[in-house]
Length: 202
Image (tube, rainbow, N blue to C red; front, side, top):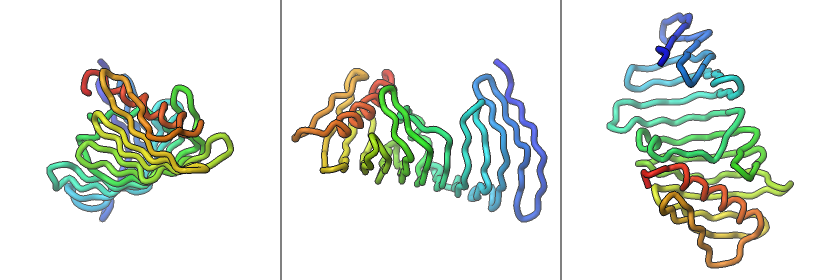
């Protein structure tokens, strides 16, 4: 284990500006700059520019409220990469509203281009309303609610598809009352991967 190292330069007045921020641990290196404004319990993170590891970048701003039993985060973020890996246990640690953009989202078998996401986290449940992206040169809209053992989704491409995914023994079982398009089947399979990521917690 290597201790976390923090190196920064800062100035303060009504705001605290952190520049050349460098945070290093065994599994992560974060560098960038940010501006903090507010009180210790309720504050804003502005001008966030961060690099996680060698490739992943993150930019944007956030309002954070630590005065509640569960921290509340409202953020607008742009990241260089996203994937379908979601740890629902982490989502129990905070609530919030997020607007996220990225060049693409990837799964084991799928690449979605230019995603635009409006996401809400509440009591460990993740709601995407919507996730808009391009696949196979066509656009789709996905509204989905991802809970501990159940995922419900409504997808619209050339038509509308509704389906559910039930997580049991780390396997996602997809159920739909109607036939699904190729795009809907690919999205459902990517969402079903979330079930296998939760380990024995489901």
